[in-house]
Length: 190
Length: 225
Image (cartoon, rainbow over all chains, first blue to last red; front, side):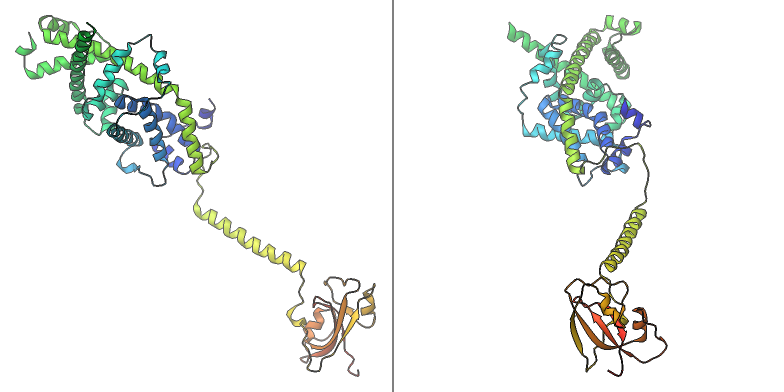
């Protein structure tokens, strides 16, 4: 890959951020490649809306190149900062209410339509969305993004033990919620 | 032994082990299986966890599919935004040379000095000015006569006039004025007339001046005239 040939050493997020602020497009593109997808997925899981996820992922990077930088290296890593931005933007979007989904959304789901049951996923999205923030975040990071407890703890700024216990509690809540939803769906279908 | 008959810590450990097995897609070990055989609550939790793990996998697939679907469009949009904000700097990271700010300032200053000096040099070539000492100092009783430059400007110098070097030639038909003036000896020397510069007194001379005010020729005035 040409990019690797030109930049053999792997730069840290913070180093790329400094270069980006100096106007280096490659540095910005690299940061985008590293973080956009997880941020998009986080926003999608937390909001249940691809339109919100798209908006949040875009807004994060627009804010990153704003004239007044909000990121301060002394307070923590860039990844945690980006994740914090995503969390706040999703909260704002949730407060503003539902958004209109793009018309081609059904097409994306059809790609994996044969592998999953659409209703189950919708129910899961609804259940995740209705969870308290502290539980929702650990489910998204640890189960949906498959991050380690240590990584999630770093991003959330919590101890590893707290993250683990919250996840176990969150899964119990989620399981109970889905059980109720399934029972209701079965009763409705009869 | 059922969970209800065990300590809270032991129950929590069993549940944690079940959750981790479901998350990793692993089967519980023999000890856990034995426990689930006698503890319906844990058996039910295990079933719930397994189902949840499968549904979360489905959710991951949907999210990954959605994230990839419009990725290139989103990427192009945000990079265009970057280009607009940072004025499309060339995408180069390879040579990460650190150039101190003072070298840039020094280079700019040097360029400015060079531009000023070069401008002065070019300007002086285009508009040669007589040295300050050659300025014509009109006598209170100064006289001047108008002539028309002939085809051959040497006619002027032919009559004891000496052409002033490094001055533009006279155009045909250009009116010239011959002025009588007293000049500093250094001024006459600079115009090519051999006089003793150490002689302190001014020397009367006649200067041929073009329409542009520049001297073209000079001669020592005849005191008898």
